[in-house]
Image (tube, rainbow, N blue to C red; front, side, top):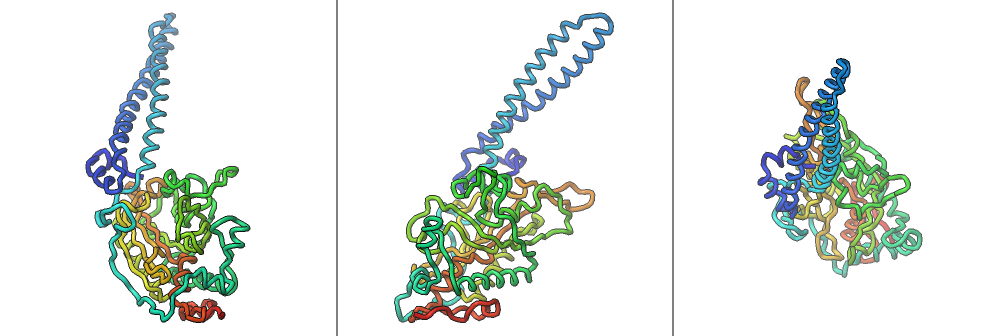
Length: 423
């Protein structure tokens, strides 16, 4: 949620920033509702105070044997003013809340211009792309022939874009998860297995609602939602808390199954396990003081790059364009893995600085000093390992002519085979 004080004090700067995201048109409407709200509040409060005074005068008049008729008529008029004012105030506050919760975060000045994925700026490429003396196959063809991925059974049981993962690929998944958790725990992130069913407040608080509702699985009977990332329950972990400055930074690593409807997604991405409705992920999350969030963002990116380097996956880092950012993010880096069957880089991990946007909505603050007023913290998130897409990158980049594929040495001690499959 954006700071209303900031919008009031510098509306043109806010509109210019939101215009980079195509979201400036509602700022004036928001300010109109805010102004009306601030007109109504003192009017209602003044009428309530006047009614209280008149009610006291009526009581005194009756004690003197007077009927107090004039004051009683004035009290009735004030009552009607108060009641109609409260009705209007409720409507104005609802409209104000509707707009302010829908506005995205202000983009960082360093976020590139543009509205699409193609507008991202490539910062660097790392690792060597494999060179094959045969036509590389995609992960689904390899995984299906080896009996490791069964999309047909998944579709039969659950519908399209669900899969059964089998055999050595399961061991690879568990190895990836444990490797990632060990690495990020060494970097100060406490491992967490969070709930994957959350109340609406958690999704509104993190900025995924109201905008992304068509991407989220709902359980209406219980008024719960399945999360698309453990970012949601991790961010909500300290909702409505005032943290002490010495507690910060607070860093977590959530491991969870994630669920996304992926409404509207189509095309080649729906083949195999690249874009599915259910997947597992290890997600880093940080609560920091405002002055530290830029440095923490670079720190999370460095951890993601370390993971990819140790997994020997060729990748590139891109700075995502302002208009392509998710609603909560002010700035976002993506690490994109090289996918041989597609001949291009595809998103594998991301990390976002959401500044005070989520914490303001969730009511998460910290007290800088003993006698100082609480301030809103900054929150950040970053993918340590998205299991399905990481397996795709490993299978495709390390495939061999005979249909097998090798796995990086770093995973062997975590239970991964050195090589999977034979045809």
